[in-house]
Amino acid sequence: MNKKAVFLFLLIILPIAIFLFLKSFGRNEFTIPVYYEQGLGDSLSTPCLNKAKTQYFVDNNLLPDNKVKVVHFERMDGPLLKLRMEELERVQDVFYNDEEIALMTFVNSASLPLEAINDYQSRIRFMDAFWNRSALDSTNWAKLKFCDMAMTRIDNRVVLVDKQNKIRGYYNITEREETDRLILELRILKTEIEE
Image (cartoon, rainbow, N blue to C red):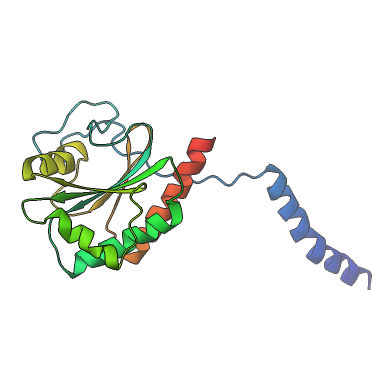
């Protein structure tokens, strides 16, 4: 009987003790990567990229200062555009009242007029104070995408840039899991800012 009491005591008390220990002394910490801490290197073939061996920072006056930026690139209309716009609306629905986050869509006006994006207004509720949509000519669109955002032709269409203008992620938001990852990493980035 005595052995059963000790076993039962350990069975009940030991998990509680471990939980309380971890709660008191443990720390949940999640981080998201910082891209290009050692510079862009030679892995990207775009000739306009800064090849310095130091932390790469996005430098473009089209992006707002002192904000976390979700930057989306679009060049063609079609069913995937509709899907991407709906996924970006999910991001907007979570963060629309956060003044530290900006969502931006840049359209290549040579192949997709801005009106094609704005025509989604009947299905997607654009909150203009949060989600900025702009058309760029092909040259400026390509410079922003390939030179400033260090993107390749393998088309990840969304980039996460932190307040210090460091690239923190690339997302293919045609996959719902990637949009979920973007939302989660935005939340993690917000906790980094608050600490």
